[in-house]
Amino acid sequence: MTAAKAPGSIPDGAPDGAPDKAPDRIAGMFDAIAPRYDLLNHVLSAGIDRRWRDRALRSLGLTGRETLVDVCTGTADVALQARGAARVIGVDFAGAMLSVGLRKVRAADESRRVALIRGDATRLPVGDGVADAATVAFGIRNVEDPKQGCAELARVIRRGGRLAILEFGVPRVPGIRTLYSWYFKYLLPSIGRIVSGHSVAYSYLPASVGTFPPPPAFVAMLEEAGFADVRAEPLTFGIAYLYTATKR
Image (tube, rainbow, N blue to C red; front, side, top):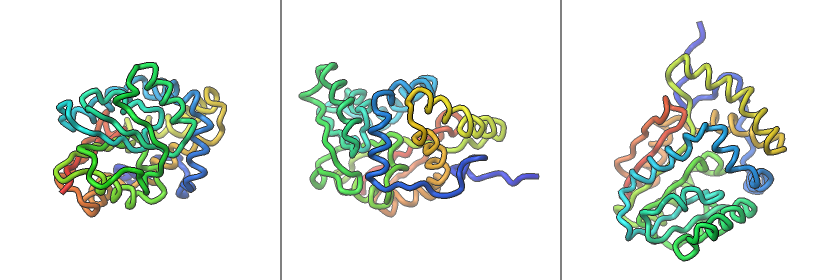
């Protein structure tokens, strides 16, 4: 009998070693897949990704007056969906991803409300306490030093401000976990490779998910960084988790 893996542990068949998260390597990988990134996100998640982002934004309770910092903004999906914020600052270190995002911002006529800045999640180019709220959608696991990334989030959010982080997890239901592991090991890398033309990026995904701290450990990391009322909510059987918190 095989022992059940804890939520957030390495999926069956995923690489055992921690992936290389050197900033230059990760930025280059995302730059390479930038032209097909949005398409693959929607295809590989069957469109559920948009519902996950909506759920994260609703948790912030935006009233239309807030400044929101979206870290690891990528192609600016969250920034553009955050219509409840008066101002959005999206930060990412992948230039090609930001270029795609900038085209989307201009096409949506949101340039006055949404600003995109190139920067590292561990050294955010944003002042102390300028944000009423912050988001990270499926990017915190790509940060080389996630503890420092959490500390930076705490630095830029004002006291009492809200945080919402979306990140992939491992389903807890045995049958779904088995199907998910098969999808991650075989189908997802194959589709990603065919559509994006990149042989590494979609093999990196299961490795990065499998080696990310499980929910209890990541909750503790956020608490250590200066957040209170930290919660981890499983979404879609635990395929993703929504972490919410308040800056102490």
